[in-house]
Length: 127
Image (cartoon, rainbow, N blue to C red; front, side, top):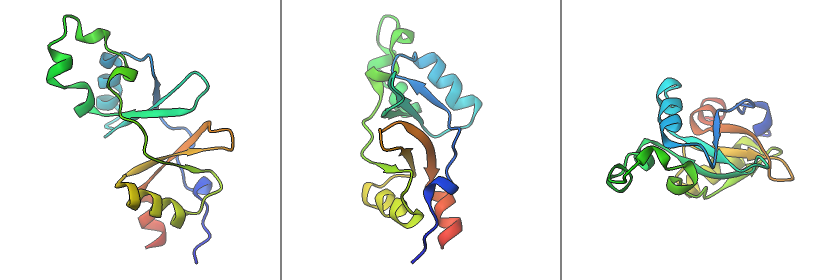
C-alpha cells in the first residue's frame, strides 16, 4: 500500500474566493489563472462550495437586472467531499472517484482549508 500523504503533494497556497465574492471577480480569477473551478470559503476559512464558469454564466443570472451583484454563495455548488490533511493519496483518489471529482479541498482537524489536491497530481504519483 502506498503511504504517500496528501499534505506532501497538495497545493498549500490555493486560490479561493469568499462566499461574498461577486461573479465578476470570480470570472476574472477563473480566466486569469486558467482554473476549471474555484473553491469558496466562509469567514472561518472552511470550504463551503465550489464555483465554475458554468455556475456563474447561467441564463438565470444573466437575466437579472444587475447580474454583477450576484455573489459566490448564490451560485456555488456544495462540496460533496473533502479530505483531511493526514489522508493518503490513495484515500484521496478513492474519495475523488466515489464523488466523480477532479480536485478536493484538504482540511485540518478544525475543517479549515489547508490546500487543494488534484486528481491529475495523484495519478502521476501512484499510477
